[in-house]
Image (cartoon, rainbow, N blue to C red):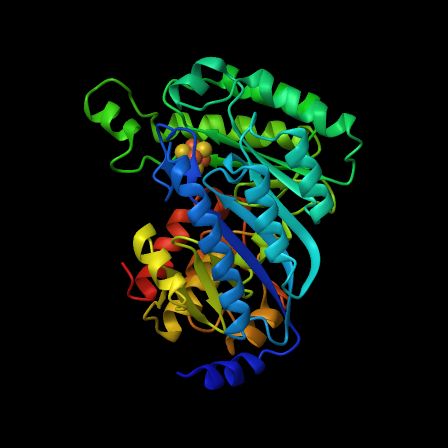
Length: 398
Ligand code: SF4
């Protein structure tokens, strides 16, 4: 497809809003459980990468991707974006401001201890209105086990600094993990006690996924660490989630909780099948029902971008793949899938394609629906994997 054809195609989406994700693939250390696309201890690569990422942003604009669209949410994630220097972050923010922005939410991921006053000032001035802290646990022993580079006191210090700056409009998310080997309910209680004091607007509390080829995987295979049983994990999850609800947080997605009006608008785009553009190494995009992935090799990514090519490939997908993904993501929200919006987007009511499966799951008390929505029941949320397995089978994906 030549540039003119691309421009014409992009024009068909005139008036749409767009989410934008930027990937910063650098960290101070690699955490023991992490298999993300990130490289620790390579500061000599940072400036070249930032130059290429900025070129990627400009190239996307030149390709016409933003024509007829405004970017209303930005998420700068990684990795650890705040590992970059002040001038490098400034360079990225300045380049972003060359895009058509009408920002409702702009998040930067931060590891505790990496947000200097200068970087905080730059973010606030640049339009960032949400900080997402990777806290994971407030227990010193578990932090060490996870090979996190911060201490629990660092989180208090960072929050004091943000609040004493009067940055009251800055929404704060904190990520936590349950299911770490050795984690007890007392550790969860400690996390909840910290949340009570720190009072963030939003909490993402994910279960630890044991990924292959991580240090944790190696430790487990060597017998140096023991994974928690599913029953133990369930106990920790229930303790955490009940505790958050007692603190007044509303659960609105399987692992996400927010104060009123503080849900993550960017992440909602993922869960409701809205368009987003991912720039940077390995980033995914979902545009007009098509999915693209940027190169995962830093050499290939840089070479392609610097030669004026977008460095992405399109995933081969069927309509059924798109539909299944829409159902799977939509059912993660407690409010479920808005049937009219889904029909508008996908051309079909979410109940139609797998009616027999949903009827069966309704009889088991896992799923329910009204004229407006299709949603998992509380029992269905706990047994979400069973619902997804049935759906996968129906879509011949298992
Ligand atoms: S800080 Fe985040 S991205 Fe970096 S290694 Fe740890 S978990 Fe992975």
